[in-house]
Structure formats: structure tokens, C-alpha cells
Image 1 (tube, rainbow, N blue to C red):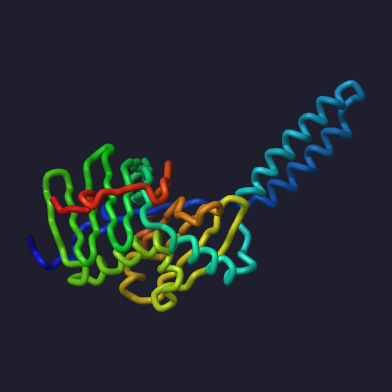
Image 2: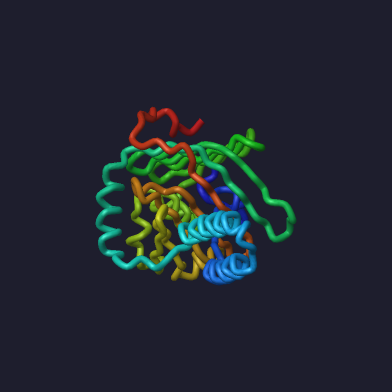
Amino acid sequence: MPDLIPTTYPINRVIQMAFFYCKGAEVQRTNSLRLCVFAVKKTSENSILKSIMIVFSVLLTLFGFSQTKFTEMKNTSLFLQQFTQSTQKITTLTSNIVQEKNLSVLSEKIITKGHFLFKKEKNLRWEYTEPFSYLVIIKDDKIFIKDEDKANQFDIHSNKMFNSINDIMIGCIRGTILKDDKNFMAVYFENNTYFLVKLHPLIHSLKEFLNEIWIYFDKNDYTISKLEMYESSGDYTKIDFVDKKLNAPVPDEKFNFN
């Protein structure tokens, strides 16, 4: 196996993320309420009940907008304290993954599915099974990549980009990336469902292929729920972690290079 990684290796097939944003919720809420009030005033007495039901339905919809809108986190110190306490209790994390890749040269999105495994301290298995087979295993300071029938093994430290990707992938699960103020500037948001951390790269080697990383953490257990990456090329990817299981038994054999 080669010891060095070619700089032209397709990094976007190793780790890919995406885009989520609720835009204009305040404008939609204001305009919709005005329309509802106008409608109620113009209706006849016999249709008042119907108008009330319409207004009630619109209010429920607008309430849904307010649930998804993120606001800036007020107490980041408390979040980081509770987040650290929760992630320290994680020994394993398993999940199905659904990835949506958006390439500027293609009009259609590329959807791939697979499985994700993490085992403390630095064991990670990222496997795509649909519509193609692609496997990434990170164990200690080695990375194993299997693309269909072609397999390669590398030393992570032999390439700065792979070393950075390793830090990002492990750091997102263990939470260490939130403390990496040397490489990233973090901005914190939240809504009723998620904590959202937006990471802006600070060093040149990261800025070459990354504009921003968005990480969504579940408010119930502080585990990662969504991972998004905006690339410098304009491409972006979204990965959803579904059917997550915490601290379930994971055999060491899952991280063997073969």
C-alpha cells in the first residue's frame, strides 16, 4: 500500500455535507396574518366559523415556522459544559446515514445511503451501500478506503488534508472540534429541536476546500443529527444521521482493514 496520498484524491467522496436554512419566516408570518384578518372582516356572518378555522390553521403553520427558525444562543458556556459532559459518556454511536450531494455541474441531487459507526477513542467506520459501495475506516492514525473492489490504506499524517478531515470527522462526534479555536471560529444557534454550530475555517489549508461547516446537535442527548459542508467550489452536501443508537455493543472487527 502507498504511504503518501495524492493531492488529487477525490476528497469529496470521503466526507460530504449540505444546506438547510429557513428564510423569510418573519415576512411570511406578518403577511399571512394580515391576509387572515382581512378575510375575516370580509366574510359574512354565516361563514365566521369557517374563517376562524382558516385562521387557526394558518397560525398552526406559522407556529411551525417559528419552531424551525434558529436564534443566536444566549448561554454558550452552559451549552459547552453540558455538551462536554454528555459526549464524555458516549462510548459508541451507530446510525444510518442519508446523504444528499449537490454539485454545481449537475441539475439533480445525488442521494446515497449507508451506515455510520463510532467507537471510542478514534475508531470510525463510514460506509455507503446505495447506490454504490464505498467504505472509509479510520483507526488510530490510519485510514482505509475501499471504492468498490479497489482498496487503499494511508497514514493520516502523510497528508494535511486527510489529517484535517480526520480531525473534523472525529471532532464532530466527540465534540472536540468545538474547542478547536485555532482552526475554526464557532458561532452558536438554537431552536426547539437542535443546537446549531456554524464553523468558519481560519487556516489556509482548510479554506482551500471548505467555506463553512454546520453541525446540528440533538437537544435531547447532544448527539450529532445533521452535518453540512459548504465547499469552496460552490458544491454542498447534507448528511442526516437517523436511527441513532448510543453505547450499543460494536465489535472491534468492524474497524479491521480488509
